[in-house]
Image (cartoon, rainbow, N blue to C red; front, side, top):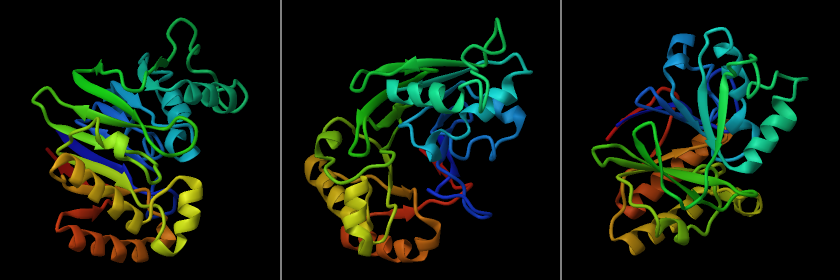
Length: 256
């Protein structure tokens, strides 16, 4: 399994893109930095997109990829929860901001949407997919993706503390999770359903105690203007746990 970090941040700038992961060039998770990172030819190779929740930085490029595929006679399969479907069709693909690509072009719409049921294993494009609820806003899910040879990655998406129930249901060889803010913003992180490095350390220690191991950890969704501070604190977490905990960056390649 080859994983490319297309976007690693929660805010966009010249040097940072919104969150999006690409697996084996065919499966994407979240779509904040999807079309801005891939050529149209690469977008046409995509078979499916898994969306974790309805916030803008995770769904932004869905209308854009719908537009890019509209004249290519291609269809992309999108999987997520009902709340994501509602936001996409009500606010982005509402025939005012963008066409409703679930219906357009007529006769061959470029987007097909399938509702996922948290906790129910799915087979999607040759991968075993398991959506697990995490501690963010409304119904946010993380995804465990397992390849045909048994390699598994779990991406929590945005989450706050309290992941013990989540850890019980996954067994990845690679964990991708978040640290949106540095430790001095802990109160705000808790209120908004996010992690700081210190909160992340507690969650990783919980994983290790529960599962008996801790996989390599990749951290995403950093606030770019606070990234140096987050990086220093994440390095402290890695030392405390004696385990690789690494900040992601745009274009980062991961192999399982």
